[in-house]
Amino acid sequence: MACDRRASGDAGVVLVIVAAAMAAIVIVVSIVINLGGARHARAHDQDAADAIAIAGASNLNPSGGSSQAACNAAWTYAVTNLDVATSPAPNCVSMAGNCDEDTPREVSVSTGAYTLTFVNPVPDDHALFTGQPATATDATPCERFGVEISHDWRFPFDRGHPTLHVQAMARFIHAKGEVDAPLVVLNAHDCEVLTATGNSHVSAVTSTGLPGYIAIDSDGANCGSGKKVIVDATGSAQLSAGAISMWALATGNASRAYDPSDVGPGKAFDPAPIASSAPVGRSAVDWRYNCLASNGCPTANDSAIADLVAADGGTGVPAGFTRWTSVYSCRPSGNLTVPRGDWYVDCPGGLVSNNIITFRGGNIVSDGPITVTGSGKLRVNCDVAFATDACPADPATTTIWYLRSGDLGNAGSVSVQLYETFVYVANGTVNLGGTGSLTWTAPDDPSSPFDDLLVWTESSSAVTINGTAGTDMEGIFFAPNSTLTLTGDTGTRAIEAQMFVNKLSLVGNTDLTLQPREDRMMRLGGAGGALIR
Image 1 (cartoon, rainbow, N blue to C red):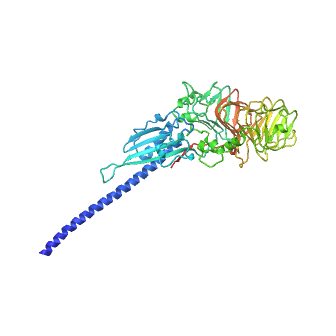
Image 2 (cartoon, one colour):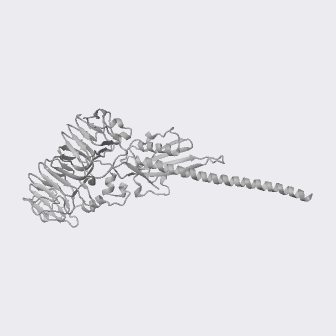
């Protein structure tokens, strides 16, 4: 009897132990499931935040304009990647207007179990940079887009509702382009950035003969009532291109972009302009020729422009240069062939002649312009012995001309020939409005830091080019703050230059073709985004 009672008691104990063990197993399994589920949910949220941040950054306006398009793009990705309802949508209008890099704008929306917050700009001291200080490669505050996601995640075996937090940040980048754009108008916010008068006709084509792009960056934010970004003042002008790409069409300012009555066969635009994926901006050119941390350059390219200014932009004789007035007059009386070498032309009023001045090769730094009048000629990087000899079209070396003050120009019927010559215009402008022949080619040497670059000027003074049948320009023309006035008739010859200007004015009976060589221009594309970790 004692044994039976003992066995019965043992059975009860076993049941208790088994029950306790099963409870423990259930608890352990629930913890494992909960932790695994939380990790999976957090990883999914982080992937979504990364994609949303890149989408937002890719659609930022690098010129510091409205971020509304970036906010809308981020929300579209959120709907896709988080499987949230499309309503309520965030109030992205609050990100319209120009960006102030010191004042972050935040847009938040709660939908289901999620609360999403978009941030732009992202200053260096923003909480998103906690634990990872901003670096020079993280772009500028206005070129950053931040995302924060709070997720009220429900445990399968628990009544608690813990909140998962993730964040991501991305920066705007210019993607490698696949678009040929002979003309890029960089003004970010104004109206009338491209105006045409008279019977002007400009064609933008590629070197293969296919239509090219005209890119217009203005979002139209500064347009007054009835004003347009593109204006056909007389109703007779024409712009021919594969596409006229306009940022205003993507920012909610479509009504300010152009007049629909200007669209159609025989009118100003045919086909109609299209929305651009992002403004072109100047970053791609800056990063190629002047890669600096201050302009957000993410690569290790040379800061060639900054180095040139540091070397030649001061006063007096640059190192290694020969002073002009120690050898020649500032008013030479006859034809002059200058030996190869680096020359400092110390003629504050400019070097003036009505004869033929030929620089055989080397670099030039001048305190003033080099002006040729009458029947004279200016020839640079022309390695010949006599003024009557024709210049080689393909010189063995390249030339840099640093113009400290004054304009680069031609007047009347004077002939100007600059072979494989890059010109930096420090304080003047470019005025090529003469009727004489103009031959100007950029350096064509991959080892040159200014390969393919015709001119660089930060001046806001107006630039004039009179295209004629005798005009031959080849390379990249970079005047991002200037209004370019194009006049003339190139006939069957195209201007083989890619133009980056602030505004463009087409005047009179202009009939010009812009057709840069494929290997002598910058190919453009939309924009991209890269994560900041």
